[in-house]
Image (cartoon, rainbow, N blue to C red; front, side, top):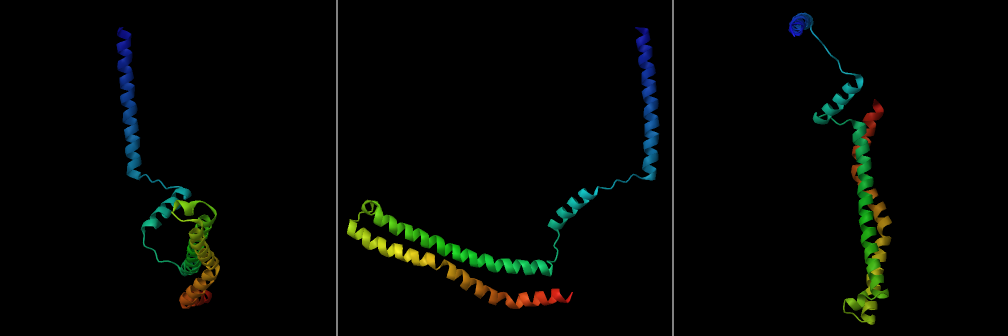
Length: 159
């Protein structure tokens, strides 16, 4: 038992000496300074995160692309609205005529035909106007932003 206590005491002394050496080495490193640089991938990620929070000026090419996309998106949205509304009206008119929905709404067959045919016709006309509306909105929006697009392209071509 006494040997164990003696061994424990010598182990504690060895650990204390090792700690002193480590603390001396560490204090030597801190006086010289310790620097750590991130890897390229981490640097890129840090830059990407930082860019989200900084107010950077939009470059001219990106502005030009955004203007071009906005014209097409607006025209497409208008034509989709016309197409969907027209298709729904066309389908509703056909349903009134060909199914028992007219009877469920309290209409006899003749009244269902008188309501269903005009409703379906109006829906078909509206749906068929979707593509002409796309072209009309596209043309008007292009005319509206043309001066800005021409100015930006002139500036970009001069570079």
